[in-house]
Image (cartoon, rainbow, N blue to C red; front, side, top):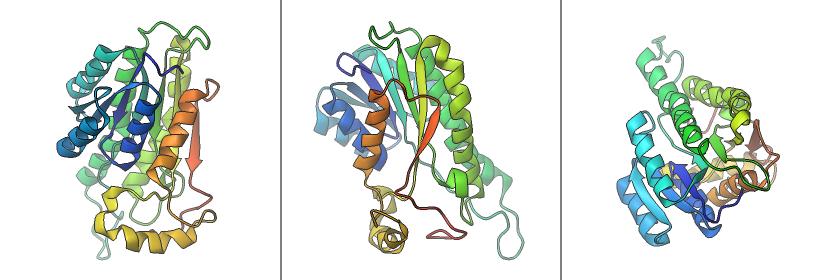
Length: 260
């Protein structure tokens, strides 16, 4: 995918994985929309990166809000890359210790934000990309990258809602790629393992000390730029389509997670 003369949308672009991806895309020559709810952080990143990065406050569950971010991107250049890294709540256990079930609304909130929100971005970005002229070398009009988690394969205790949502993202990757093949849009998903992001705040050192030794190699948590490098590899490789790639250094979640 040719980034020069193209725009990219990074949803969750103010966060750790998203911000690293924004930086890589800008360095690669794209104009980038940082789409996020975090205004201060997102605007600061846009100010840091200059005229080829703009911030648009974006709610993934709002069609109007996502379309506003897409319009900002297409005003810069044809939208050819969409990377969705947005975060959200984690939910809880199916039953707590006294037998009280997880609130249905809480379960649905997690699924809505992660799964339905990802599909909302995917469908609207695909619609904009379908209007692009095909790349003369590859025939592609765009590439869409979603973010799942290895919890979508082996969720720990307390991840029933999160695991369901991330498993849903994995499950929609191939059908979406097949749906969009007729218009030359590729779809891929990255399923990260344990990554050191600012979302952990002051607890990061303690979490790194707990998780790092569990990772086969390298024995540490992943860095946001390692996610961004994988996203860029997907953008660059026209034969990558319809697949979810685990980015986890070989770790497999066991029954209990770090905060179960």
